[in-house]
Amino acid sequence: MNSFLKKLSLLTIIGFLLHLIIIYYAPTLMMKYVGRNWEEQNMINNSFVRELPTSDFTEVIRPSADILYGGCVYDVTYFPLVIETEVPETYWSVSFFSENTDNFSTVNENSHNFGKLKMYLFGPGSTPTKVTDGFIVVSPSNKGLMLMRQFVGNGSNVEKLNEIQNNLNCRLKDS
Picture (spheres, rainbow, N blue to C red):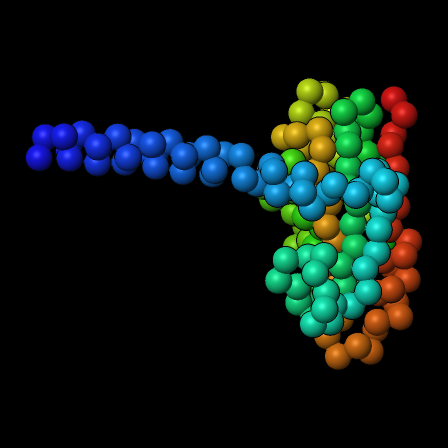
């Protein structure tokens, strides 16, 4: 019986440690897996757009059929990223995800009215400067993903939303 308890305790400890390792590394590995082609497709620090989701849409986990998606993959290791877009009068949000997939910041219609929106995304080791023409967002990692969502609803404004999405601009601010 004593040998059985030792083996059970050892298996429990190994299982617990393996669980902690998976929890710590799985999100980062998932982001690397999802982003394995981003550099080849020249998506780093450039905006991308997606069509309205269908049942075959796999680029966003659990997408909504009435949300239009766009965004940019970022690398702010050396320079901050300037993100400029127009936002609609309906629901919209711009969410920032760090390298380990944590959603660390969201800007939406509750914090900014419709019209022009400008955001400055800084990396973890930088000191943001004062800006008067937009929002400052500080990322906990140098690499990650910015995702913009716009509510399509009954589709009456889909042309305007596509225009907004196509005009999304992500560029490095060279010091």
